[in-house]
Image (cartoon, rainbow, N blue to C red):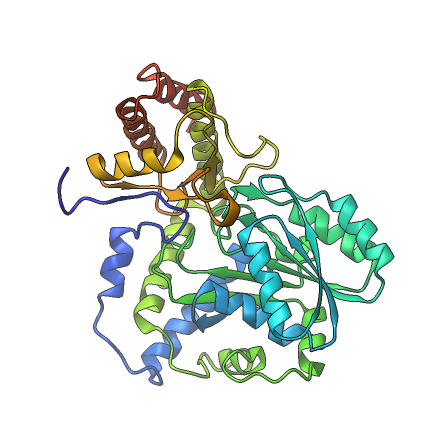
Length: 384
């Protein structure tokens, strides 16, 4: 193991492409100068395809959680009634943010590892006609579940006037996202996942319908007031000091996404998901999620006959490979592999090979190479 070599395969933060690192090392410029205006002018239209929207995507200097809080404080007020679909730790976080603002919060709890059934959301809304917003998580990072956001939005709009507000932090940029076509009213993501940047930026877009609500919302807000970001972006500016180094990097990230092509980016993530899942299935190690609910950006594995934490410790000690553990009641019961952003099928093959050795080291009886072979077969079959 080389001391400077760190194999980071957690579901965020994710590795940074070298060209993005170089871009972030550019000399600093004045954040109110013409150069920054030109930078924002160049970035603005290029974020829209990633979100699948014609609306401006607003950039806030803050973590992904700041984006979730921004979505809450701009759309609902104390006393409003909302539904939060909780399929894991980050759905739970959305609910906690709502509760912190004295919003009447209904939690629709789904078993961790399962995706929500849109029909159940529909039935809940029909029995609670006062709900003003539905909060949902696109990719639930804690479980590796990809929720059917397009179908959720469809049923919400069919039976109510509620806004559809989506946490896309761990998948936007890595999975197909069609905000306008699907009827998403507010969509949030962060910089440190499939967007291939360090943590520190959150991106948020709102539909015309959502903007009407935002304009009339009486909830107090200052730094997270979307109206300020919208009005300033019209002048290619930000209301507060931007994270300029991150914006330099974002410009290069968008270049990389454009160069590869978004459809190819999404296909690569699908391929890496299939390779990872096939490997653990070949090793007879259970996965937390079904094929239908699996996320292209993170895979959760739930071993039955060895300790997840023991394997994590072994691969970290011998190869400096970092994979994530479980959260809340899944702590110690699962491990999670991030395959998002700056990650390729070659990286997946490396991960699987290292994990196989780690499994042998902790005493798990496996056939060395069986997982790698299964992943290789998927790669050859998917034709990339």
